[in-house]
Length: 253
Length: 45
Image (cartoon, rainbow over all chains, first blue to last red; front, side, top):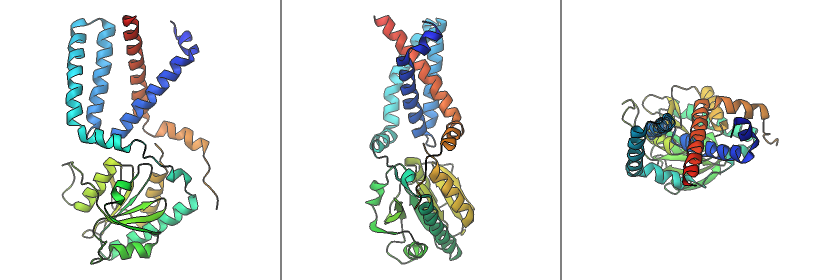
């Protein structure tokens, strides 16, 4: 079968497109987590395996075939937590971002930026997670339900010390303050600077498991940071926070 | 209020700017996997 025949055969194109989408989504899911190194390794092994077959290197082909079959079991055991999270996330996607008004999003982010600026000025720490495509319902349940309109004053009130809800994270779902005092998973990485405390670790932990946009205000350094997909953008002014948060919320997978 | 419209130019630029290497690598892998399956099916027949 030559290339022209292949192109004419629509089934081939559909099959490759489906395979491409699945492989891309798997790689995208692991991007920003420690499992991406393994995914890259598997990709390299697959390419090598294919080349050995094409070049007729039978001994190497046999070695890879046997090695790969057993290493799959090892990978399933090592990455059991990531795989479990991945399966739990399937079917939890929502269309919040695309359905939200540009004006509503601007208004919400302005309120959050204003609150972050005030809180940092008063040396008060804060942790705010904005839900994107991945559902934060599991984390909502760990906090106290609020369901209120996003306002700078309310955010400041929640994070004021001695308030029963000030410890933990604030979750924003579909443009509303849904839950306060929520517990987020702590990041398992060891390459994080010691200057970052538990709040930043919780933000990074959540960002590795979901695509939420997370805002952190440090009480010691009065620094405003943004965390997304395992990446930390720190030392942001309230204008930078507004623009960066808007850009990250608008990114589609 | 004005609803956000799907921007076709943004959609096209997004394809090339958002993880382009990941897209390229996954495409190469998809072709390799497809060729491998095709060969395996041919052997089985």
